[in-house]
Amino acid sequence: MKTLEEVAKALKNTYMEHEVDEKLPLIQEIQRLKKEKNAILLGHNYMTPDVFHGVSDITGDSLYLSKVAADTDADVILFNGVHFMAETAKLMSPQKKVLIADLKAGCSLAESITRQDVIDLKQKYPGVPVVTYVNCTADVKAETDICCTSANALQVVESLESDTVIFLPDRYLAANVQNLTQKKIITHPGSCMVHEMYSAEDIELTRRQFPGVTVISHPECKTEVVDRSDYSGSTSQMSDFIRKSEAKKYFFNYRMFYGR
Image (cartoon, rainbow, N blue to C red; front, side, top):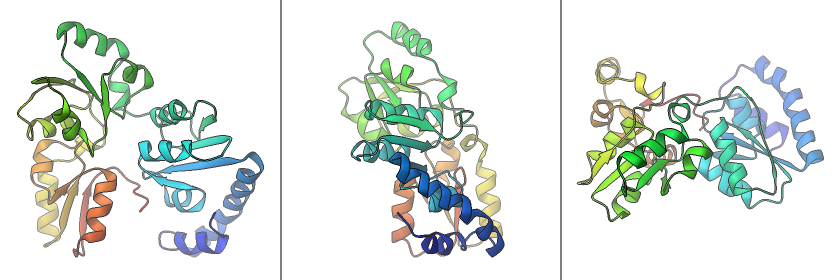
């Protein structure tokens, strides 16, 4: 667990000094309660800096957080993320109490498909394997043959013997995978309401405004955005790319906040 001094130092990179002073008492109280309840706080990369750096014990992508939390001796998992992330944590830690910080925290992509939608597709295309992006509800996962992440989507699709694959629920991730495989991809009209806002025009305008900028996109973005980016990958892959890159300026086609 970070000391208050370490937390304050990290937060001063983002907040003004008086804002940090205002946040520290609550952070200190949360740290105390974590010890008292034997709780672990998971901070998704989308969290604000005070949550990400201030109170989170583990930070990263949703699946990574759930996997690491399952190996801890914590009695309580508090997931600072959206519903499907907390569901995944519960699936991987059935013996632990799993809480979500905000009951209203939903995901437009996860909400774009239901269990019945998957059942209907399986009936329409009998025998065709179903690959589901991990960013979906437990009900949808239950009807799936195999789950994937944005990092291994292509690898999972290529691992299947079938020449045709149902890929759910993100139509843009599916389209980007389709561009990299010879298999036929059947998809569903789901999308992330944030990622789909980015356009090729955004990239062109950014490059004109910031010559030499390195453009990075998530594969949940439209193909026109991915094709015009210098790099496209999952959150962890983007982090690795930036750490190894010598570029000085970056433009993210990605939802914020990005805690790193």
